[in-house]
Image (cartoon, rainbow, N blue to C red):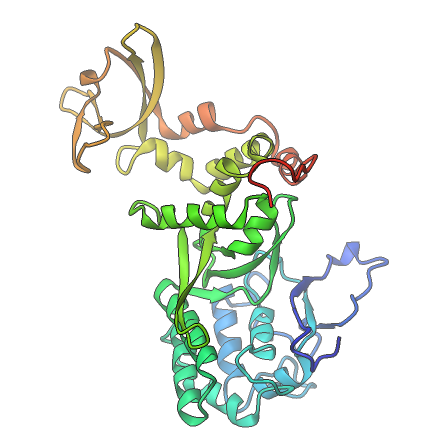
Length: 405
């Protein structure tokens, strides 16, 4: 594969091992270094080695790369502009030392070097590079800037309509939801296979916004693609669900609108948990890792502690046959006489319908939400052991099982 063959290129970011682990390490084939020692490096050092936060560093690098002068990694190396990036890095994997789960200037280099809307030529033209810089505005997010770029490009040199409509759909999806494309990066889905990242949050605050294409999810989950699409439609029709998406665009070739299903990280987990023929094995393998995630993210405490009090109640509910079932209920508030107030559990209850827990049961316990998370949802093994359990994939794959492809 050459750097000027966009049809074969699926470039990605590669993390160089720490210095003490580099013995015997070799730069992978078809890759280039983009560390600070090269002209492709980021000169703006991040705390504690430098004065900048990560966000500041990336913003300064982006500003310089799209400026008239370009960015200069070191005083003894030539400056770099977007045309240099496209001409020299297109099709190559790029190596840096940043963790792969952390934003990095290499992500920007990859996106500029491999612009999928740059036509069939070997690289973007000088006019296109200038147009990118002209359209960029730091007050807009990626999708909004992309929309301006596509509209401007289309006005100057009309694109093929199918490409135009698809590109604008990507721009609208990303602009409305604060997303960026995954630029063909992949993730290992719990040992079940690699999934290409379709879109992800523009910042690190919403990791569950990572989205995958349905074809990838069908392959790693073992769920028939039609069944997966039917399930996606059901979730899309459910007003309470916000983790399934659709990329909708007009296709001149089909003379109609097409919608490509997208599954967020949480939706993909639900597919594995409820639809996959390996769902029982997946649940057993990942439950400890999920427990660690619930504790570390604070999600468990939020779910058990409600929006206000930070406490949860363990209600001893009696069924019609006298059996006792213990149910965790977030405490919304406390009454004047210190009785927990909880949300009404009825299916037809209004969102603002609350009642004293004594109206539901005679006996209950009150726990601090953080203690309840650890006691009732907390992990039983170390995080390292949980990872080893979770990322082992299916022990056996029987494609004759119902629901597999």
